Length: 121
Image 1 (tube, rainbow, N blue to C red):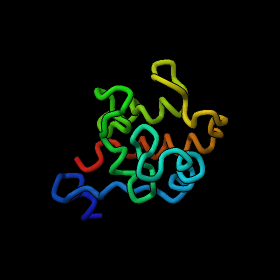
Image 2 (tube, rainbow, N blue to C red):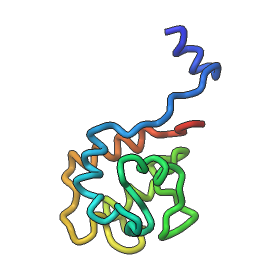
Image 3 (cartoon, helix red, strand yellow):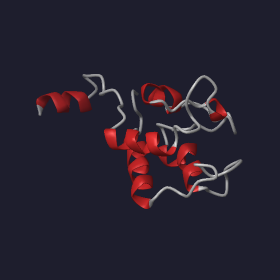
Image 4 (cartoon, rainbow, N blue to C red):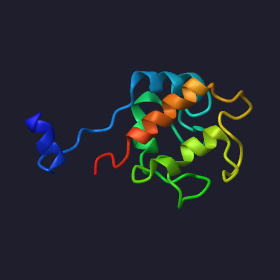
């Protein structure tokens, strides 16, 4: 536990964010149909090796002032708003022309996004 205390006191670099397997599974099943390849929808590649680089603190194509996953305020992350179909989004709810994500899959994504608060800061 001494190492964890040192981490909390600022003596160590926080662990790098990761994408858990259950989150990767949801993204593969629900998002890769459109967000893959050389010209992904919305210029957003969600291929497993690009998920973090594409989402963490990156501006949305809908509104560059808004972040896809905002690590300072994850509850404001546009990715979640698009998946839920919040009124404030531009365009369609994701996945477009498909059923809403089941509650358990949405919860997995929400829990993961919330766990990224201040990732790498």
